[in-house]
Amino acid sequence: MSTRLKPVVAAVLCALAASASAETVRFAAFNASLNRNASGQLLSDLAQPGIVDFSANWSSSVAGLSTEQRRVLQAHYVAEVLQRVQADVLLVNEFDHDFAGVAGANSTANAFGYSSTSAQRFQDNFLSVPHGGGATGRSATEAISYGYRYTPNTNTGVPSGFDLNNNGVVAGGDDAYGFGNFPGQFGFTIYSKYEIVDVRTFQNFLWKDMPGNLLTNDPTGNRLSGPGGFYSPAEVDILRLSSKNHVDVTLLIEGQQVHFLTAHPTPPTFDGAEDRNGKRNHDEIRFWADYVAGGAQAAYIYDDQGGVGGLAGGAKFVIAGDYNADPIDGDSFKGLIGGTQYNAIGQLLDNPLITDPRPSSAGGTAAATDPSNNGPANQSHLGDPALDTADFNDTAPGNLRVDYVLPSANLAVTGAGVYWPTRSDAEFPLVGTFNNQNLFGGLPTSDHKAVWVDVEIAPIPEPGTYALMGIGLGLIGWTARRRR
Image (cartoon, rainbow, N blue to C red; front, side, top):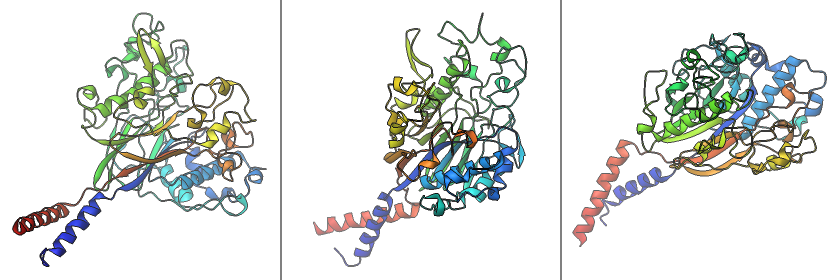
């Protein structure tokens, strides 16, 4: 080979190597129970991180604390869990919504780039502060910082003006577009180390506009609409599909666009024989199945920004959130109904466009038979407890797999897990056991556990790299022909 060509060949090889190396990106979802019992409490809690000593030993740190201090301590424990998970892209479910420091929610989509004051305070006062170490008996954590955030608006607690639970009174959380005792309760927020380049929200999408939905095409004997149905025609016309919001946050990672598809469907309980929440949960999950299919299957979809349709073919995505549906156990809408087989979360887990990494933990297995159990539900379950992500009441429904991080099939998965330490682990106090009366909400952090998945995302070479590669390969080919 010509001496003059050797630098060109070396540059080509370097460009090829750079383009081949992939970035490992960790996506995570955590229903962190950062919802509060009154409007504005989360804003207040996150503004005063120092009212409790979170560096103390867990067993002594709760003694004599006020309710407010216990709420702030819970937020510190949530931050410590997230620092241990070290996600690059994170969804936090059950995070009360505010407008620039004013608690509330409404039906207007938040602008691209909006981050609530609570989301900012949680970053500055909790995530940016190391935890653990010292008297806690746990290893110290490192602060974690997210340069990009988005807080979507939410249907929870926003009044519908209708008696949606048919109790004769138009008032309360059951009559909101999504259950919430006040506007903004149970919202969610997104943190990312990668640039957010676009956002689509679907807060106002009407349930009836989904073809073949379970609202107007109910296959059961307890119909939701039509003659004798649970909802009146006027109610059917205003019911929204999303109990909180469905949000597509587009991230720019290694030159590629990756869609982070986030939601928090309603629990399939707290209703009656009509199973209105179970059917809504099913269709909230189905929405993403149609969205990632794209094309004709997603043609009915419209967003709050005026766009229509779903993802383009071959798009890369990660679906994340608390979907309140176990594929085997629990109360989600599933089984053979009217000659059709249903499985709410199966619409995603069994989808050829989606990978189920089946994240697991030793803590989930141990919790199924933990002495603190207060009921027999776990013993009747058929699912693998190692896959469980929630420590629910053991009388009913028991522990379930309800939290998910599901990459598209065109992303390579390199790791996955559920943050659920066992009793012998020094970090166990961060998850604890169900219904400890000394703690806010009965648990150190949440009845849900953080779930994470690692995927590889290969960089797309810059245009100049493509040009250099083309020139170099052309010269190599020309040299080979000359030698022959």
